[in-house]
Length: 113
Image (cartoon, rainbow, N blue to C red; front, side, top):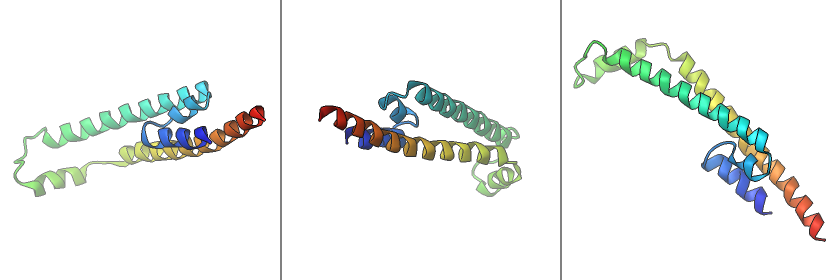
C-alpha cells in the first residue's frame, strides 16, 4: 500500500510525473516531467511578454486602474490554454500514479505470499 499513497502524493504535491518515476515507469514519468517543463517555460514566457507590454509605456503604477485597463486589453487565451493543459496533465499524473501504485502494491503483496 506504500506506492498507492506515496506516488499520487508526490505527483500531486511535488511535481507531476514523480509518481510515475516512483512506480518504476521511467519513460512515462520522464515524458510527463518534460511536458510540465515545457508548459512551465511557455507560461513564464507568456507572462513575461504580458508584463513587458503593460509596463512598456511606463504607466503610473500608483494608478492601478490604468494598469488593469492595459491588462484587460491583452489577449490571454494562450495563457489559459497553457494553464488548462497543465491542470489536465496534473490530474492525469495523479490518477495514473494512484492506479498504477495500487497495481504495483498488489503485485508486491502477491510475491510476498
